Length: 310
Image (cartoon, rainbow, N blue to C red; front, top):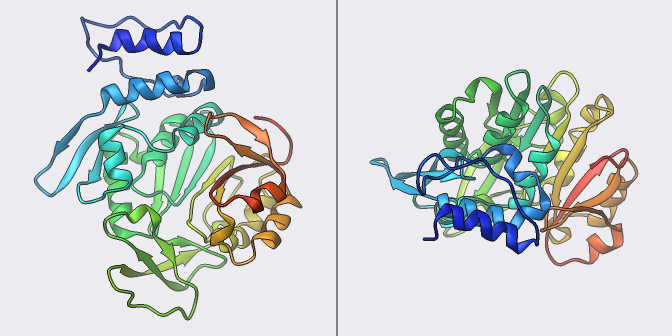
């Protein structure tokens, strides 16, 4: 493994400019990254290298694994998970563009909502960014993942800044729906439509309660991140009141037309209320046409605001 100081210098050379960093304490000791370190888009490749250099994984007696995420946060992950958990153990990050975007968007004292929180990676980051005067609400239907999210908030001393809800965000609360997931890659778990046939071989199916984002927070929200694997239409229908009372809200929502029941209708409804922009893999935000999103075979990270601000 290359020394940390070498990686810092390499990050600078990759982008043709010098980079100032705090000095190392001793020898090759690792510098604990700060949230603001993720925020600069031109440092993306170098920051990913720094995070990878600090990735660690320590098996625990219960089958979980303690790892270091984002070069900063100790986190407990599922040792059987070949998806997100494996990547955090190996690389120390996941969806780095989203990490960088949140780091440069969220401010102390704000209210953030993490919809599809998984094991809490972004929930922990959000809670760190909003500070003791802010608040985070996290929604995750998978009971095993919400348990990990709670452990990770506590492990980082951030439990007092976040409330966790083991439920599926939907158009209305108080119902019960089926969540289908692959136990070896639970990040792709998805809700089954009402009346769907259950009992598909090799997949785990769990009954979960629903809630509407309109009922999640009483006042306004500043930032909402949505990653719900095809349930975006239902989530959107259940957050119209929240949008109405949050004039400065920013919504970061992953969409994939192939997973939507009426992709064109849904995106037209979104575009009627918000500017359509996208978060690119290089962490930059740029305008995007509705037709371009519909034509893509994969995911788009939509950045929705009522006026261009990021």
